[in-house]
Image 1 (cartoon, rainbow, N blue to C red):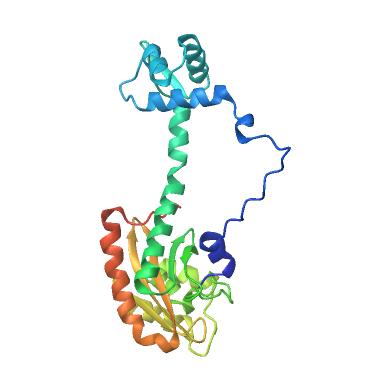
Image 2 (image 1 turned 30 degrees about the vertical axis):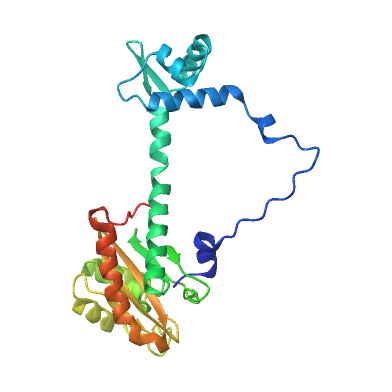
Length: 276
């Protein structure tokens, strides 16, 4: 269900050991710019005052001389990082944009941490995928060397009919959207266990009960079984899934039920963001 590259890029990167610093290389502090440091301290101080703060107070809090504080504050106002109103300084639009631009990264970190929790709690690889703009998008995968993710040996987006993730996402679409997807990605045999044709798949999807896990046994990869739990994420179809070796098929239903319970318990009303 995921390429090895995807897994390693998101979860398995090992930081390189730092090389010894050459004797001739300057110490890190030699490259620091004092004015930038002082400006950052002023921004942090302003951020601590929702009702704004005057220059004298900010200079006192940051330990800066008042003329220096005035100079930096005027510069920050000019650049849009601060705004001044009736002698008080507030965070400006540029600073607010910096704060909001970090939101996707924070959401991704939250999802990665949640998947790692479920991976360890269940003892199986865990996948998060959404259906957006007519495509199956495998957003994140969490696995371990002892429980590796399924390798994407056939185009994952084009074989949604053959794996639990794709079937779970398609089951959440309306009939027109399902048929549109199958027109673009016709059903084809991936393994001897793959659903035989589009009509059979559509009937299967129609029988899928809302918010119930979807199971697939060796339909995408021989020797692998998987289960996918649907997630309500606004108007977008989303799913969390697990995979297991076929000899552990007896664990599949309990794992799906555990995942379903864990998703509800940990995410609550927040749900997983579909915008990461």
